[in-house]
Length: 445
Image (cartoon, helix red, strand yellow):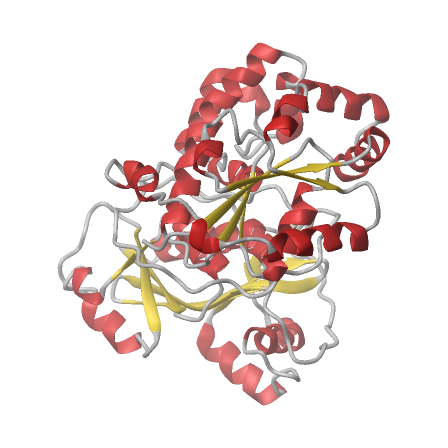
């Protein structure tokens, strides 16, 4: 486990913490957004989801079983005791996931954005505490715009967070984000140059506490999409590609609930690519099978994944379409994520996994996995295997792990599955596996 310099990034709602985190990511830091991870652990079917439903009742659920965040927010922000109950449920799960991500980190500097940094005790392991501030007027304006709230609702939301003054006094540095982006960036760049990673304290004892215990309880029993948060990383393309637009299509049916997979070994993975500009509006995602009418849009998406300057030819796209079994995620009337899959002798195999950014991966990949696994179970598949290149963006493996997949070796798979996976495995690929059925058929079809 590689040691690293950990920056604890704090700030009230609307102060601009995410903006500063994204700037640090662009400078080379690994970014972790604790609020975003809270959305992940609350997905339908997780232990956290079950505890929230037990505490607040089914009234806070949507018609298909997801937590309605507006209903839950209205409940807890009007009742301090209810808010404390929610935090007691969510914080331990988020902390466990943060530790898991930190154990696998390979970057020399990590920035952890967390409103509740002190309440969870994570500040004790930070090498520096950075606070982001802005004027109250600017803060209310940002909360109203980002959360679609009235001025009164924004003030109530901010009041529920309590005073920030004591936390501000404990910060090592303060960044004033009241002005324009250039002014904030100048402060961040100056502070970045002063970081000395070699002075980082050893965090192995803290991180290995949960590693010696049971697996982190965040693998969803039935993955569901998470609410959108500003993106962190996105792969770049040499030149812009003009994209054809897609008409919306109906979403697939909700999946059946399944048991979480067995624990598998998880080595470190490569760092993510540079950060992308922030997204201010939620991206609504629809997931479905690809159709021949999607060929032009699929050619663009595949070109982005493979870092090509131009879309694939119609002939090449048609060839891949015929052999790939693509499942696509559509957002803003374009393909924003996709995966190709096939099934053979009890094994579902996923390759060419792609999402255009960390943000899209969080929203779209759980639903893509959901769709593929539902189809795989209908074919009596016992395991789903994802082939991920060593150079794949970190957010792809992060989402695979959050959805119950574990990195493993070929020799650790069931003997029936090994020949099929060995035949498909390419040099430079890693195996991520998730068992789909408890009853294993020991003879292939």
